[in-house]
Every structure is written in structure tokens, then in C-alpha cells.
Length: 183
Image 1 (cartoon, rainbow, N blue to C red):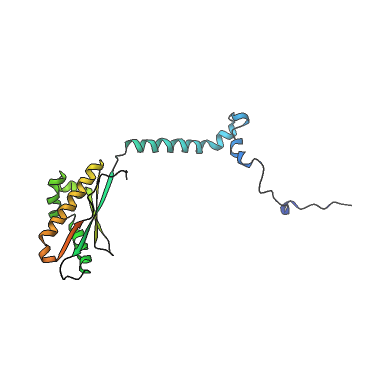
Image 2 (tube, rainbow, N blue to C red):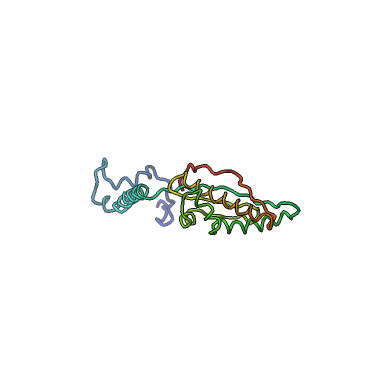
């Protein structure tokens, strides 16, 4: 009587094989000695890993460090003005924060030129709230906070001069402190 066997194409496969995690290391040969076959198969991976590590270390050492400090200025309506108007003024004052009038007033306190301040300070507004975020960036944490504080104070001063016409008042939420982390 003939025994029944499965055709090779229908045989169940063993999905889990003992010591399958050792398969990549078998290319190294017995007891870690390099074989020609293993060297040919794994040299691109080894070279890519070493090259990536060297390039990453070089980038980290040679790249300029940059800190960022962010602070918030709140716009509120004064007097009998509709509070929803403050949202429109926040958008307007947010655009003015990086304008020449505000940066010229802030340059003395920050100790930088207007062009340097324009490159270091960004202002963003929220579409839902009358809040202006002012972010300063610099190579040192204290310089980033000083630039952002100078611009926020100058923006508050410029808004105070126009408070009679706009019926809006700007208030600094908190004074910025030097950032603790790199960006």
C-alpha cells in the first residue's frame, strides 16, 4: 500500500522556525569569523550605518544651535466697544508687530538693528481668540527672550498711543524667560 504524501506546493509551511532571529548573523560565519559571502551581502548596510552615524554627529557638532522663546499679548476691547472687535484688532496688531514702527521702537531695548529683529522675531495670531503670539529666535536663550520681550513691549506702547482711536488695549500675558530647550 502506498503512503499518501502532500504535493510540495500544498505542504503546510512552518511559519515559525527555531532560531530564525539568528539568520542575519549566520552571514558572519562560525564564531563571528567573516566569510566572503557574508561580507558581500552586508557591506552596504554596515557602510550606510557608519556613514549615517558620522554625518549625524558632524551635523550636530557643526550646526548652529538656536533657541526660541514665545510669549503672548492679549487684545481686549475697552469701554462700550463690542468684545468681538478685539479679534479684528488682534489680527491688525499681529501684522504690525513685525512692521518698521514697532521694530524701530524695540531695537533700543533689544540692542539689535531693525533688520536683525525682523529676522529673529515672528508674530502669529489666532483666528479664534484675540491673542498674538510673539516668538524670538537666537543663538542664546537670553537673546531670544530679550528680542521677543522688546517687540511685545514696543507693540503694547504703539497700541497705547492709538488706544483712543481703536478702543483696544494690549496686555502682555507673561514676560518671557530664556528658553530651556533648543529648536
